[in-house]
Length: 453
Ligand SMILES: [Zn+2]
Image (cartoon, rainbow, N blue to C red; front, side, top):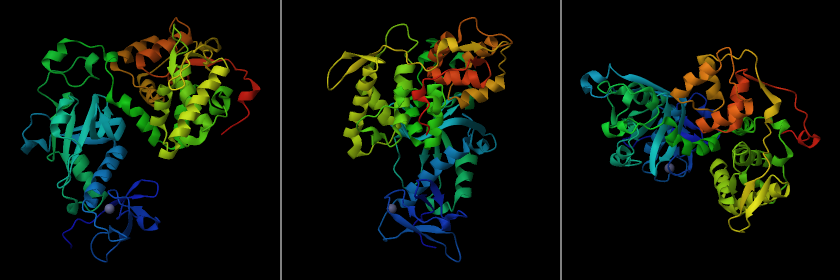
């Protein structure tokens, strides 16, 4: 077999990572190099393992390395677990003493406080950065830079690409082996020598003695994943994006108000139906501030930035995207939802004048004998995209122990949304899914029922 590393992973037309050995690989029409993006051909020799090679025989020195890195990120994304060494255990015995870490949310290739990292997972015990090290491939970020983040970080060293023939090899060394992993910054849960952290600090990064003293409220800490949410949303399929948007709006798309279906110039710049990006901006900027005691300000540039992070805008569509957002906000002002605060053509700013909240508070009531179980809370909060800190779990369970909070639904939703840093629509969706809230039939203006997706 040739010494040069064979490329065993590639991207298909829709950017999925595939292996040359995949059963269905030979049915796929096209494969592309992860490193250079050029087309690859699948070769299946009579003896030996299938592999990819460049169609135009271009020299692409690190193609196998980059392909392995992309495949590793894909495996972490799909598997949602990794076996990690226990801190302070001698490598000789570490292999049998690994600890399994699982997560629900994760993202590849993301910057954590300006440091690019290969992978971040949100585990029940806080964030975990996974740094993928491949012999011969430069690092995504230096160990020292990652260590300085003070977020638990694990370095996984993969074998030379010549030694990984497909998914099985990769999964074994990436997920299950322990002796090829070491901590750049320790994970509190894997550190048996550390005293257990108080519950309030579960979501904070592992603490040094000095920092443990300044007991921070969990809500004051912003997860690195909060920055990643928009990038994550952008990677979702449209059906899943729509699901998120319906939760943000607190309504199925067929019942969205006409405020999120406004014909504006440049509306196709975000690559989705205008109702998609408009509902996104409307629920994120107008609805979430509707319950705040003081009128909220909305800056044009914030709305544009938010949408550009959440949708693919082609470089030649950037001007159109600016136009679309500008005219959309102007149109909302024309409808009395917003009122102009600073009429600067470059940086217009508006005030929310009309609640716009499609979730009218007085339409909603608590269920008579409201019950919320721990497992319901766990499953449904994840479904609604909520991250419930450990200290709020108990409070929530006690609030719905055959009873319901004494405040109106709307106020409770607004308060809980603030505590969770979540859109009220998501909180409401969660309460509805859990059967804690019922709504009286809402009569909708005819204009909002016309256009279904
Ligand atoms: Zn290439």
